[in-house]
Length: 344
Image 1: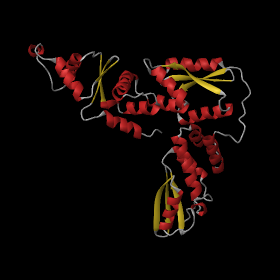
Image 2: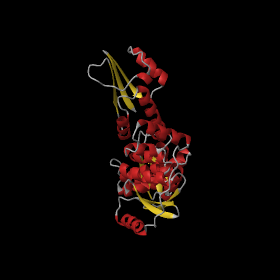
Image 3: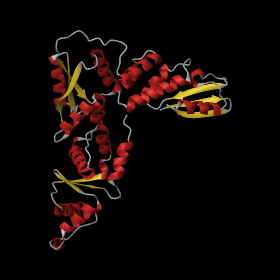
Image 4: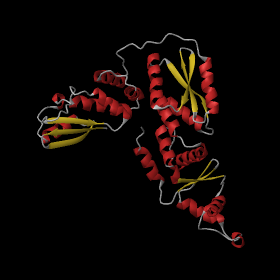
């Protein structure tokens, strides 16, 4: 959100944008400003009675501020913040990338583009670039780099005009912005995506493909960048399966997967445990405080102990092992945090 600090003599108003227009006007009136928001310029001149200062909290907001020149109004700033907020809520990455790459020469151009995105209409006809010979060498080099560079976690295949282009992920903001600029030039629905190569096995190829299909390249890039180290991938897959079984839900969207990866330390995973006897043995083996002498082991009921642990820690058997929650952690709380998490 943008932060607006509005000074009227000795009176100060601090509010976040976007803001309900009527409520914003009421707040202006509360510090003695009778001007309507659409007549209040974004001027911050020393000695002036009324001054408006705007502050950004994200890189795209900082770029938006460069378009909010002093002759623009507080209403313009609020509308721009509304459009940017709606773009993120509806997952329209081109607006965000356009700001980051300074694609909008004026605020009006940003506003017009945003409205086009929301309505699905375009005021300018997209022009397809001239067909170029398929650059097999470039595609081969991307796949070759994927083989030798572990930082490239998957390769997306973009098909347009009968030709293919390989996109390595994850990309940083400028790189991703350049890709979306190129896609905008191709025109909407003039290209399609598929996953060419992926490092992860198990259920991950299907999950990543679903994110690409349902949420698009921006979400897939974010998911790829947020994925844990390779040694934690099997644990994350087990946790996802645990949540699906225990909570009766499908974990197939980027936000939930990223949130669970962020909460991975709230779960324990015992690979290879097939029954509660295995669980009881493994729990005691890993405990710093519970150790049995060899003389007592043959008399200890590991199965009953494992049953108690399963009930106490919301345990669940999954493909390849056993998952349970850390002490004092409840799955309901983790899922609530997943719902509240905002992705940047």
